[in-house]
Every structure is written in structure tokens, then in C-alpha cells.
Amino acid sequence: MNNASGRQLVWARVSADPDAYFQTAVHSAIAIGFAYTGARIVYGLGQEVTAARELGSYRLVERLGQGVMGEVWRAQPTPQQDATWA
Image (cartoon, rainbow, N blue to C red):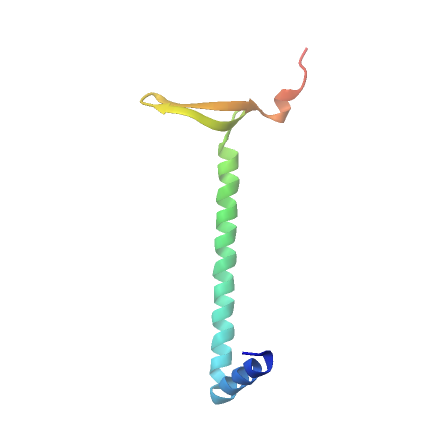
């Protein structure tokens, strides 16, 4: 379908049912709102995971093992710990 016939199809539907255009616009706005809200939730959860991986002055890098007593992680000092101490 080329661009001109697509426009004609849209205008034919709008002229046949004027509420269809409004309904399409409202449904599109609702879909965009849900997509934006979902994206913000996922971004916020990612930020929480990043913060949770910092344990005190160390950042957890990778899990080395897991057993009955718990987990063993490789950790790296945060940038504040890289400073030279006297």
C-alpha cells in the first residue's frame, strides 16, 4: 500500500465514522501511557538492583558459588576505597 492510498483509507474511515478517529487517538494515547509507565518501572527496578549489589564499601561482581550455608561472591572495592590510606 503506498502512502496516498493509505491516507485515502484513513480519511474514508474517518468520514464514515467520525468517532473512529477519536477512539484511535485515545487508544494510542493510552498505549503510549502504558508503555511509558512500564519503561519507568523497569528502569527504577534496574536502579534498585544496582544499588542492592553494593554491600557496604564493596560492589558485588559475580557469584562464585552457592551452597547450603549461603553464597560466595567476588567483590570489588567501591571507588572511594581505591584511595591511598596512610
